[in-house]
Image 1 (cartoon, rainbow, N blue to C red):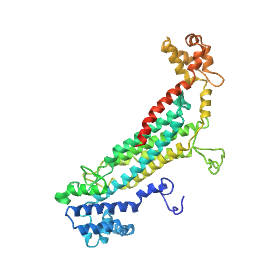
Image 2: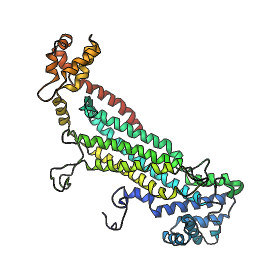
Image 3: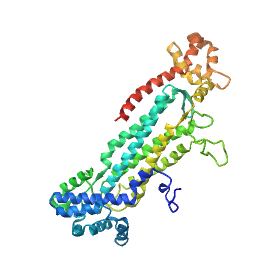
Image 4: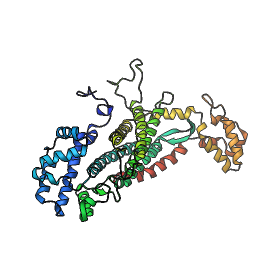
Length: 455
């Protein structure tokens, strides 16, 4: 825990998330965004001749400085029991005679939802950077280990060889799919509104469309094309479900590291500071995959946060407040934690220790069984029925373990030797054959991913 955090309740305040990313969701930052929206509204109305230009300048000056304080807003809200009204009153106080024009024609959700759109836009950019950082770390590992042979595993059992580089390329491709999803969704999610009490814009009169489009233009946003009193909550639901997908990928990658770091496998390990880091308070030998376990835990929480925004899509008529309270919790937490797990997984893969010798040893200790597919296909290709070839290999690999080898058994099997010869058996059981294919596919995948990362 950091100094000054002794009274903190939520771990987000002192344990999880980057400080600069958490700052996006601070109460001060949210106040400044709301004031920015009010100023943009006034400037647009002045441009359209709906309020005096000098009034818009005064409102803008009061909104852009530090004249409106959080303390004063809190003081007003204590009596008004309305957060946006407290902001508009505080802004009006500091705008002098121009205060009469603050919030002219608007409704609270015009300000709060548009300010939220600014917040989500900035936060999504941070998440995008995290996706890029993680993908780049995976691509580097994929390049480094494009032809590093490793046992492939399905159902937790040995399958056939692949390269560790290809495993990393698969992860990088998945991460970049999420970045594409985020880019595609950003225009649907970060939208504001300036359309009044039930979304018709009636309070702005004949210039309603111009007020809304001009305000959004100043803020760098697009407008919800058909809002009610609020921006459609299908948009935030889309965001949190996208974050849930990203969290699912992060946990999948973290789980892969955790499994491969198991003592029985030992093919990779998270970086460990031998001078200072401690793995256990009692078992001094422990070197645990702590970051990957932390990501696993937090990713499950991010996915849980996808549900409330789906429920928030169902509101009464043009709006109610059933969404408001949970959004104050869900959106910052889901975004901060998603950014956090992406940065942690990038750290894991940048510092990942890959034990190529252990990978080689695990391959050889499997007795060659992982190459049974290649032998079966060769037998089939040279005249045996596939079912017969499969049955031969199923029999040859039964109870295969330390001290025995598929090569020796295959060379002792007349039906195999008759078709392939002893030298042919050795060649077909060489894992390098499969790894060459994996390395070539890794190159093809990385060529596309590296081009995309450069954009």
